[in-house]
Image 1: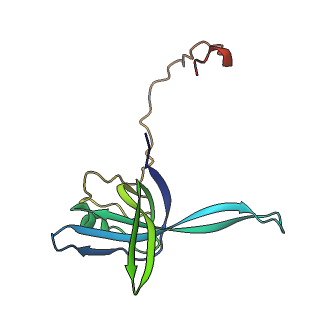
Image 2 (image 1 turned 120 degrees about the vertical axis):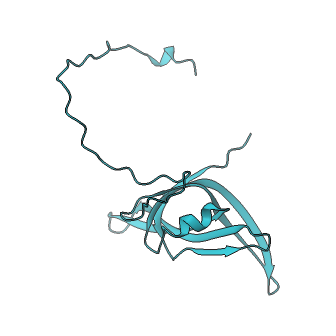
Length: 151
């Protein structure tokens, strides 16, 4: 068995590009910068090192999603890795990209009323309605030891 799932969040490095295949399939592509934090050995300070990830989305959602994105937009993406290779000008080239299954907009101003159903917008904090004061019941503490866990 193998699992091919990827979760990333970051900012778009360029405006999204949409194109259409000869068969009519829409393809949305853009890059996302994802930071990796590492400690600098000379200074001892933590530093961000960017990783640039190519992302692609296919189908009818591609055009709808493209209307909500622009360079610098913050997104969270779930998808799978895909390896591609080709030859150009006699040179062998290859890349790994994320094929997007789900995308969540994390920047303000990216959500709209016409958002397609498969997309989720950024969580919105709301103030809960006041409730009558009730006593809080906590379950009794369970004593679980490593020996009790079956794996």
